[in-house]
Length: 88
Image (cartoon, rainbow, N blue to C red; front, side):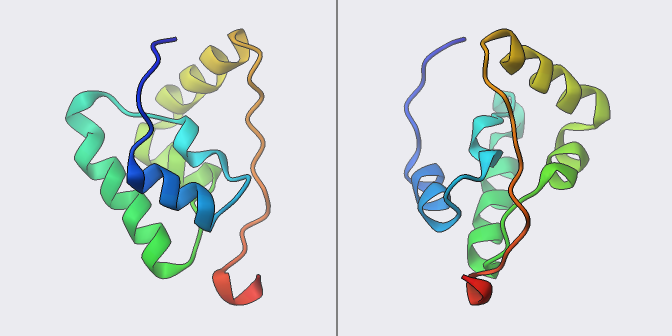
């Protein structure tokens, strides 16, 4: 696993949706802009990303590969129930 700096947008997402693992998933460089747009859209709409959003973004095989990769580092991905800001 390569260490990297967490971006201000990822920090904002994590503060907005505590416990949501979406920012654990990080795309290849060519997908960064689209991924950041997805995070921004989630923050602005008040709706956290879920497993189905990550599968749609990374593809089924890509998502499963990432889950398995993190499992190898003993990181278990668990998704909280979706909840909007208004339900908080």
